[in-house]
Image (tube, rainbow, N blue to C red; front, side, top):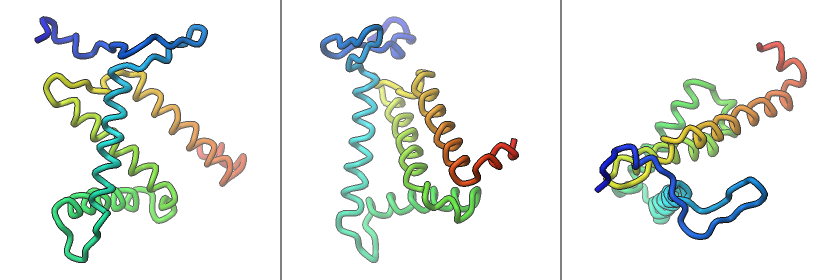
Length: 145
């Protein structure tokens, strides 16, 4: 057991050091928990939709409730024009949710506790929204601000 509670936020290298110039691309415990979270999501959604039934079983019911919750939230906030972006929003929501839930397990690692992870997601979304805004509205997009 760790003597210091802050050691749970330490990023450890798992394997050889991989560097390109000053950029360290080594596989870490943060990378491992992100891959575990993404794999759990894919496996859960695969098995919950594998044998679809009119009367859903428990796992199908959970996935449908999650799907409907996010679909309703997007429809209520952005309307029907946001339907093309639903898969991305759904994936991002479920990934962050599962990463945070995995972090509540004893001796596990919370990926989103590091500001760089949330910052990269936020920057990616900001750039994507800006590009989509310019593509759809041209320079009139700037009149929103």
